[in-house]
Image (tube, rainbow, N blue to C red; front, side):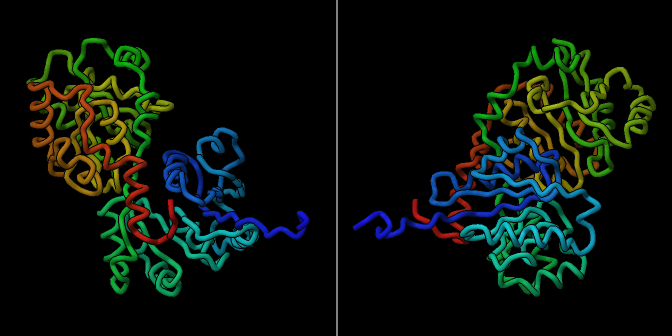
Length: 373
């Protein structure tokens, strides 16, 4: 039998991942979903709706192929007809088994631009509160399954789409490559030097936009209330920028703790420096998940989190929770950890729940894509 007469080999199957962009945490979100298929028969093609081509992003996507559509935010408002045409062309280019789409716009484009089954991943609350989105999802529900990054996000979607079977709206936690994050994190001394923090101070850390959702006002109030009972020279270090910076600085001055509160601004690759902190505190009101909690835990830093949103699911059993916006309860948490000073460099066992391996096992158990390892 000649080479031309030989039976063709098996057709390579692919998974199409469609992301709105790669800013902030969303590059790692693309990585998280690409590595779900490590060791399986599937290859992954990741498509970014917005954002210019970037070799660094291509490397960070952990995908077999990366495509940049390079639309601007203005171009993907409205009907998004150009994006739908581009997506249709990509979907027809090879044998895709399904599409994983992050956030609502990519879900919309993927459903209208192909006949593929779509797994929609939601990273925030309220994505289906609008009646128009509920109608869209209900009309295309035969091809759509939904994942929330926490049980809190999942339950929010289930409440908005009450006619959907519960098994079509599930949870797949955000996660980190624990070893890779730890390898990236620098030692305490180097971290403090980079951030300009004293070597011997007891430091409470916080990372996030200076925005009402993050509620750094309660953070400052709780720290100010606890400060007389904390070690001498204790500091609150807030990493991030935003429209509330002047207001928060004024609050620190009003409470008489300006000298003890450091506003570090936006720090590139901030998670590299988490070992600078003795305690990490997240005070958000509607945190869908809280990746910074995992990064702090990977650094061996004790964590405190407001008892709401998805953060409680991360911290439960491995850190301290306090009622949202209750500065006195937060102050008590600071004092408790300052007195015990335990846990530094101890990585909690529960962090394995939020690992790539745990996510692969959970995704396979959902049964939304069949494959043999």
